[in-house]
Length: 386
Figure 1 (cartoon, rainbow, N blue to C red):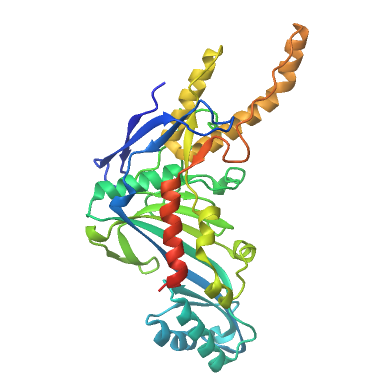
Figure 2: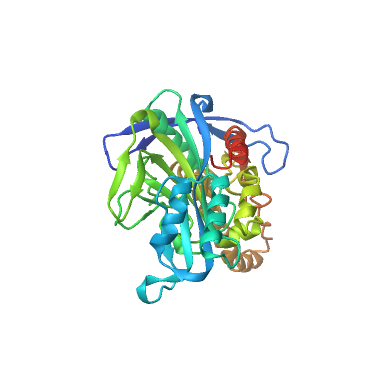
């Protein structure tokens, strides 16, 4: 079976747009039994053609004051420090829209300035406790060294197809891999809930849509997109169009309260001291797939592996995970009936084959891409969002 191929990545906002992503196959050099004799497939892309930079998109912080006030007075304290008007939301406001609890979203913050904001708010309103970090969004951008819509689109295809979210993203429907391309429209799921075993009904994510894994406001979510606009104000319906020289492929990871607690981030001071390089292995992880070369005495295995390859082309690593999980569940469900059938014929049922150890059993680390992201996050640790 030939796993080297060219994949055509298509647009949906611009249906005429097409970008070719080439894949090369080679024998694995891994010694593990689960990988021996298999073929590993890598995208043909020179990561050196891109800059790679991590940023803190935003931080949501909760503040509790000893006295109630209105949101505009909170903004008046923060705006001179950060140089922009922050989004401030009062929690459970009373008459006159006053509250003593506020959520403030800091866009692209410099963490040292957040400490100054906390000090100023304490001086003005007297804090009952330090600011509590509610959620954070971290992004890694890949921008072509030479402006190119093809290179940007190709990198979007690589990020979405090789993302490895190391957790269950299929049990809860709203977590499932999907894409959006127009505000107000329902998402399109890459795989139908009733078609996990087969690739026939797959819907590949277009390169100019937003690829999404994990529910909005869930513990963690991932988004991959082609970033062509900035300073978007959803309520006002405004944004700034970026010049082509600033277009980039972006992966965003949003971490909610429990994830932050698990990382040891509770208060603003914890965020200031946090080593962002720790995020790579846990949230910014990319894999390449492996495929069988030998199919033994079972001709149906070749067809199954061909469909697995097609699933990867359509839905990437997340799609293959969903397929393998569904196949395992199907085999386990059919096993009692198969045992009875073979026992009646005097035959033994073969043991279930393992996909590998852990969630990454059928994959290998995409070391080049993981390395670039790790370096970008390491740099962010030093910059602290500045």
